[in-house]
Each structure stands twice: as C-alpha cells, then as structure tokens.
Image 1: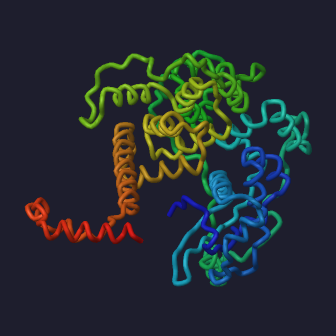
Image 2: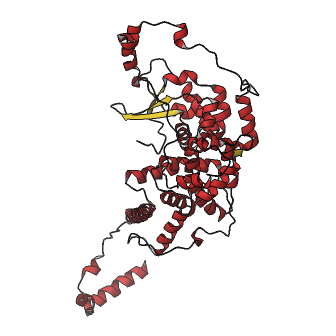
Image 3: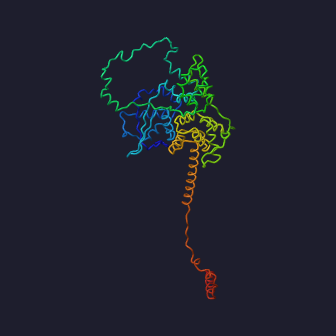
Length: 453
C-alpha cells in the first residue's frame, strides 16, 4: 500500500535493522542531510528517538505525535518519509487490523562515506546539491586518516583467521544447533538497493568500439557500466556524445576512468536552462499510427515526449516559463528512471501533466509518486497509455464536477406552494357573468355605509 496522505490517527511502531548499530550521525549530517532537506532530517531523528527495546505491534502510538514533534504539516512529513525511504534509511510496512491502520518504520544504517560515494544515485544527487567545491572538501574530510601518498611497495603482512584461531573441524562441517536456531530467529538482512538494472537501449558495444583506440583502461568501462547507463537514461546521452564525456573523465597520469570526474562533467554539461522561446513541440513529428483515442495534438505531444530524455524534457518545460530544474526534481526523475516501471515517454507525459497541464511550478515527490503508482497499478507503462489515462481521468473529473454542481443547485431549489383564492377556482364563464340589479343595489348600500363610518 502506498499512502497518499500522512494519517495522524493511524498507529505507528519504530523498529531498527540489526545493522543499525553502525549508524553514524556525522555521515548522516554531512552526506545525507544536503539531499534530504531539513524536515526529513529532523523526521528521522524523531523516529530514532521513539525506538524501544523488543518492540511489538501493540506498542503502537498515534502518528499525530510525530507531526507535533516535527512541527510540520502532513504533506511535508509524508514527502520527508518518501525521501528517507528513497535513500534507503527507512523501510515502511503497513497492515490493517482490529485496532486500525498501523505503520512500522524500520530504520536502516547509513552507508560508509566510501560506499556512499560509490553509489551512483546518491553521489550524483549530493554533487548537484552542494557543488563541486564542497563535494571535494567532503571527500577530503572523509579520507583524512588515510595515507596521503600510499606507498606502492607496501605489502600486506596481516595474519589470517586460521593462523591465530583454532576451531573444531566438526563444528565447521556441522554447524552447531544453537547457531542454526539463532540464524532462523533473525535471518541476515540485506541493505536496500537504491540502484537497479537499467533498461539498456544504449548500444554498449558501439561505445566500446568508439573507445577502442583511446588511452583508457578497458576494465574501467565495464566496472562503471551501471553509472554510464544511468547517466544515459537520465539525460538521453547517445554513444558518440558519451565517448566524448568518458574521454574527458580520464585521469591523464594513469589513463584510468574517474567516476567522480565523470559525474561532475555530466552534471555541468547538462545543467542547462532553456530560453523561454524554446517550445517542447517544435521538433518534427512524423506521422505515427497511435490509438484512435489520441488526437493529432496528443500524437504531437507523444512524439515529442519520445524525443527527449526526462531531464531534458523538464528543462524545456521549465524554460518556457523562465524556470530551472532543481536538484530535488532531478532526484525524482532519477528515481523514476531507475525503477524501470514507466517508459521514458510515460515519465515525460507525467512531467508535462504536472508542470504544463496542472500549472505547478515544480515536481513534488508525493504528487509524482501518487500518479506513478496509480498508473502502474492500472497497467499504464507507456506514453500512449499515459495520455489515454489522463484523458479518461479528466473526463471523469468533469462529469463528477457537473454532477456535484447539479446536486448543489437542486439542493437549494425550493418549490413554494400557496393556497389559491376562491375566486380563482370559479369557471371563466361564471366570472364574466353580469351582476343583477339586486346585487348592484346591495353593493351600493355597503359602500354608502362604509363612507358614513
């Protein structure tokens, strides 16, 4: 279940991974806080403060306590929770029982600085958020206890385990029952993976061929394949352009590919603010046979969505209003690309809907996640399906609004019933009949008596 609102009346319990003992406050503050933001930062510590020994579902507390502690609105806290989940610091579980809804927030440890830098998604986000100068300073700080100039003649002479310790050989081949029982009670937990496999529409062999005669260590390319494919998916970089970017990322002293330098070069190259005269639909749109439900305008939008990478498409939309792509928006798009749930053109249609159709100034994680989850649950994965889904949604919304207006109008419309006078009930012929001389005399007598009074 994906929550679209933060329910203050729902219960919650805070637990922690067995690896949470390695959580490092300094790493959290220096590496994670810049990409999380202040509300997510304080929300995590609010959860951490509510850790109890041996927690059970019965230990639940109302989530309204968390709102009061963080001093933020429900939507802000929900977005903060989503960010913590996205970077792997919180795993959220849900169930509905006899008491009501309850969420379990399982806290995860921070990565070490080196593992954080090795993670493509996290390191790219951090670089874009704090800039190259602060990024370099942070790296130097995390490596301050390592040898500044490691001596290549050093040999590792450390003793291995069996040189110092001796264990009964039978215990090695037949694991003792006490250990087996302990493992069953608490199986080894896996750290949540942020980076997943990329949909590979990139011609990797072509890139290798283009770099065949260049001064680069070939093994470095394979070791950094995931990073290169991620940047391709995010920015729509083709093979010849990728070759140029990779060559600019080589350390000239040793011909090794430098992942950190590569991220910096890509970030600076594609940090473009388009002019307000740029139009998304200006690219040529060849005739395509799409679903009959799509109009010519829909087909033009769809073709444009297929031509642009997610970040480039958002940059063009923002350029039309003089805006720019924020690091938070890059984070949202990176997450959508990495999940591989929606195609590139579907992601772009979602972006168009939020920015152009709805008129929002920025992409927000909770709103984008709500739409993306709804689409995926209804089998919407392509750009064509996304447009049809939006048209269906808009039609239903208009019908509901019309029904609501009619219902409201009828609610206040009252039928007023008044009793008709007796003369109105008489036949027309009777009303038009002339009065007799006796009736006229009686009428004159009544008028004369009234005048005397």
